[in-house]
Every structure is written in structure tokens, then in C-alpha cells.
Image (cartoon, rainbow, N blue to C red; front, top):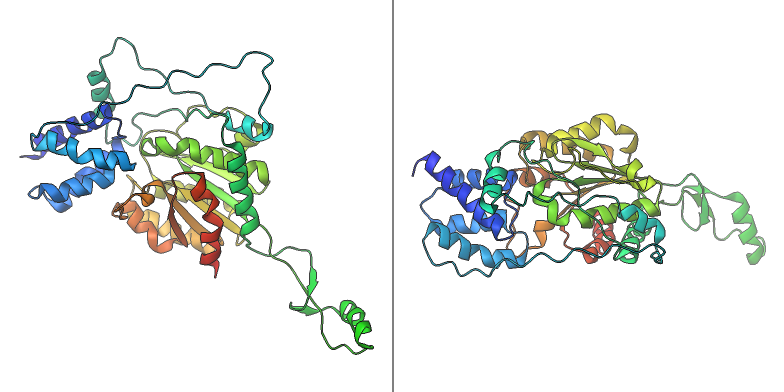
Amino acid sequence: MNGTMFLGELTAFCAQLRRAGFTAGPAELADALRSADALGLLDAAVLERAWNLIFSQTREQAAQFPILFRAHFLNLPDVSPPRPEPPPPEKSAEPGEPTEPEEVLANQQELAGGQAQPDQGRDEADTDAHLLQTRLSPHAGQGAPPALVRDEAAAYLEAARALLRGVRLGRSRRFVVGERGVWVDLRATLQAARRTGGEPLKLRYRRPPPRPPRVVLLLDGSRSMAPHAALLLRYAAALIARSRKVEVYSFSTALTRLTPLLRAGQRIESNQGWGGGTRIGENLARLLASGRAHLRPDTLLLILSDGLDTGEPEQLAQTLKKLRGRVGEVVWLNPLAGQIGYQPLARGMAAALPHLDVFAGVDGVGDLLALPGRVRRALR
């Protein structure tokens, strides 16, 4: 099979995956082509396992993928379950309806408009062909941010509180007195000596206590991260509601600062920070150039991305190394890392791993609640 025939077969397979509910966008197609070039086409079982890691984002998809792969490439019968019907639209709130208890966070989380509906007259196969037509363009298929709903606000606020209270980076300008420290506190030592007959048996020290970190949050807004975008935005809104020292950016082919919009409770409109391809290294370089004021030794840099990058891995590695020298900790949360059998084989993820303090999976608010413990272990 020549290259043109193989590309056509893979494009048709991606269209089939999209009809089955998979996210088979430009980044996944590019990674599939690179893996086929590296592994070859002789062993279908090896290629099936590699592509399963690329295209599947949930356990259900991982179980369904072999059936679709064999039905398309090995001409076995397709017995995959039908795609579920989309849920009915939510009922709009009537005037005068009571608001949710967490009004501040709820207002911040109701920021993005819904996805645009396709034309009713267009056939589904034509839609898939149109989406895959510019599959390798980094600017293809620019999309809208996800629609957020008012739910689980308390859980996300608790996850944000746990991170800000459980992680300490840097020192406060105020001093506390204790039995250990940097400087001897003469007044506190003499006051303690009154209890031992005037003998200063125990010295008292002054020290600057550790303080909550600054947080810089980078949200991957590419198409491959669309199923997880609402989770990430809710967490970002909760962090901003808890602290004034939080900066939030989204990126795909461009870097967009979301902090003013989230803090003011404004809507996040369609822009280059959502949809299309992913240029992680280029956007980290933009952050390094324009966001230096927020990159300090007491900064916790949180990157939420699947690591599927269409940029150069060398640029990603070099920029992450520079960022690691400026901030206190670098944490990368990958939604794919929680899947059974996941290995960071994508070029971008493999290039980033040596420069990370914490690499973990994130699939829900429970993983966000466990994040402070992971960071504390890294600090030790």
C-alpha cells in the first residue's frame, strides 16, 4: 500500500471513529501517521495497540477501538454498539428562579457559549469529510470553548482550597516565633525565661513562614482536549475565586490570557485559544516572554494537557527547562495518564517528562483533590 492509499484509508477510519464518538482530530491523525511510520504496517496487532492509545480517551473507547479497527482494516464484522443519542437541551431558567448557593463561582463558570450546530441539510459523512479535509493544518477547525453548567461548584472550590492551603512555596514577609528559625528573638527568649527563673534555657527564633503559592494555570484548548475542557475551566474558575494570585491561560495555536474574563465573570468567546491543533512549545515560549512577572520561585506552574503536540519536541523541552529554572514547581496533568496501559509515547509528552516535578492523570474532581499530596511529596 503506497502512502496516498494509506492516508486515504486512515482518513476514512478517522471519519468512522468520529461517527462512533471518538475525538479524531488533526493532532490524533498526525500522531497516528508518525506511529505507523515508526512501527511499520506489517504487524496489525502492534499498530492497533499504538493507535488505541492515541485515539481512545476513556475506558469505554479503549474497549470499543479494537472492534472498529479490525472491522475497517481486517474486514471483520463491526459489532460496535450504536452511538448514544445526544441528551435533550437543558430547560432554561425561568425569571425569578432562585440562584445557586455558590453565586461567585457559578457566575464565573457560566462563561462560555455552546457549540455551533451543524447545518441540518448537510450529510453526516460530508461533515466528517469537511472536518478532516484540513486535518494537518494547525489552524484547522477553530472551535468554541465548552459550555459550562452550574454543578459541583462546592467540590471544585474545595479542590482549589486544598491546593492553596496544602502547598507552600516561598516565604512570607511576616515573621512568626518558634523553637526553630533563622534569627534569635531576644524579646521572646526573655519572656520564656521568666518561666524558668530568669534562665534562658530555650531560645526563641524568628522565621518567615511558608506561604500559599502563586498559580499559573495553562489549559490545553485543542480539539483532543474538548471532552475535558469543562473540567479544567471549572477548576480554573474555582482557583481564581479562592486567590488573587492566580493566572489562567488557554492555548492551542495561540496563547490567550483568560484571567480578566474569569475574574470579571465575563463570557469566553471563540478565539484561537480553543480548537485546532496544538503548539505547546511555541505557547510556552510566549508565556516565558510575556508572563515573566508571574513566573517566580514561589509559583506553581500547572499544565493541563494530553501532550499531543504538532510542534517541535526540542522547542518544548528547551522552553520547559527554562521555565523550570524560574518557577518553584512544574506540574503536568494529563487526562490520558489515568487510562490502563497508558505510556507517554507521544513526542511532546516524552520530551516534557524530564523537566516535570509531577506528572499525573486527571479524570475528575477527585484527582484534583489528591493533587496537593502529590506536590508535597515532590517538594520533599
